[in-house]
Image (cartoon, rainbow, N blue to C red):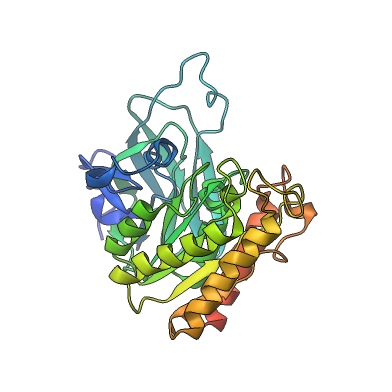
Length: 337
């Protein structure tokens, strides 16, 4: 094979992209652009961020990969200005290398690889919404990684990966690596309150496996009563099942939140009562004959030491949660290997 020189043409990133739900004028987005009017403002805002979108490739001889990208350049008062802008390469053995750069209207980053054919996964930075314009191997050609089962996971800021220090450390990324799946992250910080428009979008989205992990934001900032969340969970599952009648689906109930467990919200519901309502709605559906639905109770999955701020997991917590979800998926017979 003739080594590929840096001045060879760039490869189209499209065949290499993973974790893509929808596209809006060619740009990956995380909500259906044809159905945004029915979404809450916070869902629509978070859906523009390319959370979980990544590149996956194999190579015979490449010693490095170059990525050409475009990102928003933060202003002097931008709250995200000081966040690390890093590209990380992973393989099946773990992290290969990280390279940190600056957001730019257009730039190129070069990342050294280590021996082996891969597959390699590049996690771009998620702040400043970078758009991948092209990639190329240095010293050898790149090929798109083989397709993997598509796992769509919906949740709130915890699913989106808040307080994880790198995109690859969020629990959906951890689970996806453990299962060998193509993770599509539909976590919406501040939202994920059982919005039925989101359920209908999930019903239309291709998926081999599904996971739902919402409910914490139903305690606050938008208060639910326990009966309301019970019926919302039933309705959400009903709508998802209209598009995915037999798709394996795991529901993860809310994780530990010490300040909310026994504290009533404005409708008198503690997080413990809301969690019980979600779990009861799920068990009732299983008892009614949904043999492709499984429940993972969230209360005991993490301890206070796993929480960075009393709500969101730290890196250790995301890892514990991600591996617990992978174990639950296998125990349910979903993607067992």
